Image (cartoon, rainbow, N blue to C red; front, side):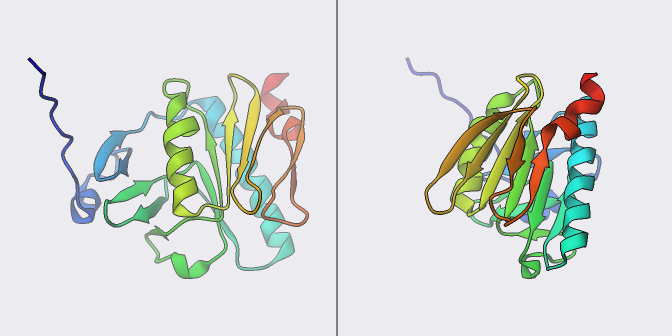
Length: 187
């Protein structure tokens, strides 16, 4: 006899917005997924990347803005898909409504959670690519690699070590030296 599996409860935008602020969740196709609390290493890498990218954007002008988690990105209304990337750059400010980014950011960086690496490598890769994110980086501190996924033109999927200087493909002249970003905690 086949075992019946229960379907996850499908949540609406109104239900999501009514959740207490301390809940750390993302919504994929209307289903709620809990998020793990980030580690000190995760937050340190995030802070270094945020400061580096923000400094670059301020120096070079333009419309692009950088946001760290927790900041919602609504990738889809039906089915509801809301994520909170660790770091994102949004260049089309019309997507910002004061509460969230509505649509795909231009550039997303996720820092892998040791408890669920498949979330970043598989699930989020799928959703980000299909939603129209231009570039998606996966920073894996356990493996000490950065996977760059560039979805425009000829699709790029390249892995770099933490000793590499990596070009942000959506920018003409933005390069991130990961030995500077990660060197402070590897010593």
